[in-house]
Amino acid sequence: MKILIVSPVAPDALEALQAVHDVVCAYDASDSDLKRLIVDREVLIFRSGVNITADVMARAPALRLLIRAGSGLDNVDVGYVRANGITLERIEQPGAKAVAELAFGLMLGVARQILKADALLRQGQWAKHQIRGHLLTGKVLGVYGAGNIGSRVGAMGAAWGMEALGCIENPTPERAALLEQSNIRLADPAEVLSRADYLSLHVPLHESTRNLFDADRIANMKAGAFLVNLTRGGVVNEAALAEALDSGHLAGAATDVHENEGANFASPLIGRDNVILTPHIGAGTIDSQREIGERILEIMGAFDAGIPAGAAGQAHGAQ
Image 1 (cartoon, rainbow, N blue to C red):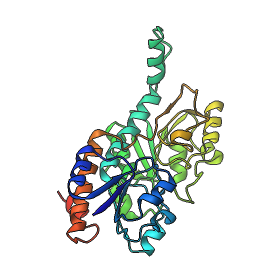
Image 2 (image 1 turned 180 degrees about the vertical axis):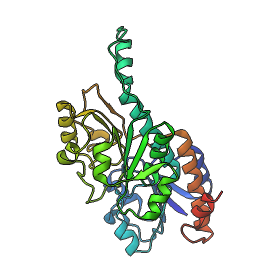
Image 3 (image 1 turned 120 degrees about the vertical axis):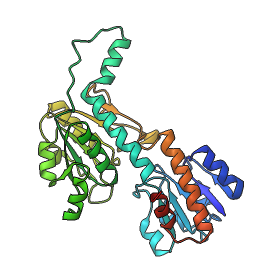
């Protein structure tokens, strides 16, 4: 099959695809390059950081399969995909594990001022009595968006001895019971905001969540809380977050996603020692990317064999 890969995949998976298929790689390609390269392609493999618009896909009349090597769909025109009968496969679980672990790592990092302590020590300052951190144990962990990733974060918090509260878009008794199995109590968003000592964000980006955490919503957070953001750039108003940090309303923040990413990166949060910024590395572990590569090969094999969409994933999940 003719495949266009526009985001890096694990080397072993790429080598296996190239051995069997006609593969073109175009990492960091411009919109015009995508439109040119996709023309004769049947399969498109992508991650975040590239926009798969209707205009791009319309240039490929033979396009039959999209593989999103991750979970978010904010960078693909799903309406066009559905209208044109294109199969869309997401590979959610491997990256979810990595993002959840990073969320906890960021919480620990900002709570214990690890970056500040490291920087001072490298400057020759023994700041043992200057660094005053906070415990996670015994605190309230609020998970705003307790879905695939958020529920993992909540379960990790509960195991750490935190009280885990979670909110979701469409709460039901069934969802509440499922979260309870991971020691997460389903709560309404207002309670999560007002009680969380650590608030971890895990909602998708669409029109209803764009700028969701504006000045008003941030003001409703518990005074002295920490905000951890692993959603998408655009969910949090960075200027409002900066103001909340400067005023002392929030004790700190850590964010892996940003309003302006890549070569255009800029943030009003730069320069604060109570903030940790990472370059959208949530799913970027060697282990997760290897597992994603294996799933890509499974999906391609199933598609070649005519197995219905989703069946390969269900079989994989049952293993």
